[in-house]
Length: 214
Image (cartoon, rainbow, N blue to C red):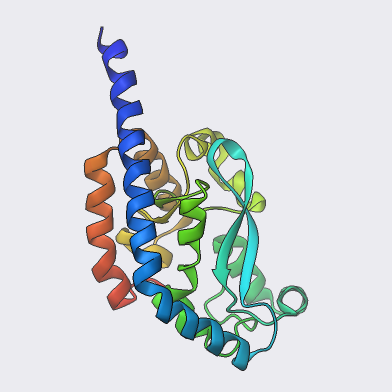
């Protein structure tokens, strides 16, 4: 009886969360439209090229989707990264460990400010409306990161990736990748409307203080 009762509850929670995603993402897009337009202009002026960057990420059920961001990197970012990793052992080790670089030579113009403030992720509100992401969930990963999850990758696939999540409100880049995976598993197992709003509330001060972001 317990198992039979839990299934509709989880389904109902997912329905409520999806409704909240649509309403909140729509309101945020309207409210933030002037800021997003200003960011778009500054991005292009600082480094002419595409304003948005759509990176292939792993989503719900393991399906790939284009994750939108304001472009914070140079148009030749891939070449810059390749050259750095070939010539800098320390950077190569950091990339292998975290899949991120604190001093990333690919970032140009206002890119560092956008990443520090998380404003580069505002276009992901479009991903939320498209149903590819949720406002709350594990951060979307790239294919190369799947092996980091090992047998827990299936847990990651159980929920939609999110703009905010347990990892972000728990220290973000200051947290080890192993702990990040543990948090994603915990979220997938404990997902609820209450946890959804708790993470949203905790995200506000984390973003304003730019803790753990680079």
